[in-house]
Image 1: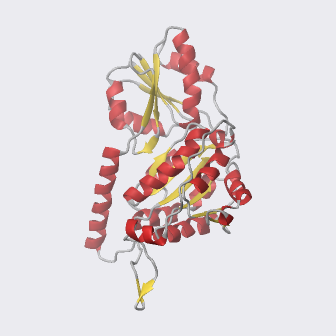
Image 2: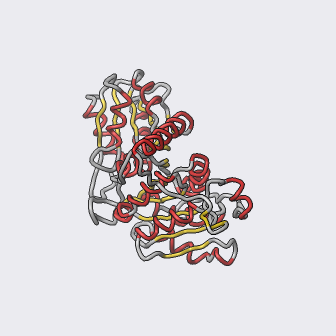
Image 3: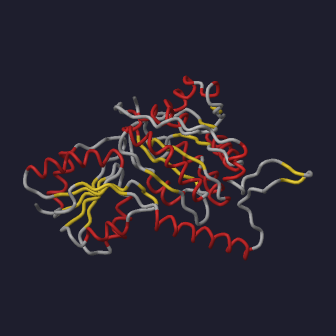
Length: 353
């Protein structure tokens, strides 16, 4: 099935309580598949096409605030509209899942694949000092697997989580093993697991007020310091990477998502020529694997950051390397997907191989 279809099936199987979304290419199959499967008749999962992406993210805010497993999906311009709501969720410490199947930009851009939303996801397009967990799948299988993982991390840390995919992974068709069915939680289980959630009113007063508003500067700073400590804990415990032939590598390619798959083929071809190249694929774009890249920088002669954009992740790679080894970047824009041969040519040219 397609990557987008895999996410929809996984959501039903992972005990998702509600999906609120809006159609946009190249992710519309998520909503279409959910509508076709009619999970409201089997698991009780709500599936709603909202009137806009702004409405979708605020429905997520409400559902997550009640302790429910809720999700939305969109593509780049639609996720741009959600940024205020994502910042509100981060500030109020509300879990939820946002899926972004990226397309080219800026603005309305193109419906073709891109990885141009790296900054939007990892730096945050909303206001204030906040982060969200960002997972970057490189296969249809990971599109399915990361749904449950995203919910697990979101509720563990009370933080929004994003699956940052792209039009290649969303549209490509591959074999996939879907997760086993996980029953939706009962109201009693939600009360037990989410004591912070708002669950209505008692004696005329709200049970748990969910808000990101603090009127006193001292209280706002205290809350911000609490968030920063939480982010440090996430960075210490939730970094995920995949490596390929890094043990003896003289050169390193850093790539995520569909770009990492292209890089894998380039590395196999380069190895055939006797050029020892390895791959580091960040699975979590936030938290980013600074420490592991820093370690490898002391081993290799050069690092090529390959991403389908003008160069965004390369900034994090350079922060990790701290000038220990040369770092260059290659990418394409406008929805053009590079080939392995282009990656090979760039690596040889940049490092005079």
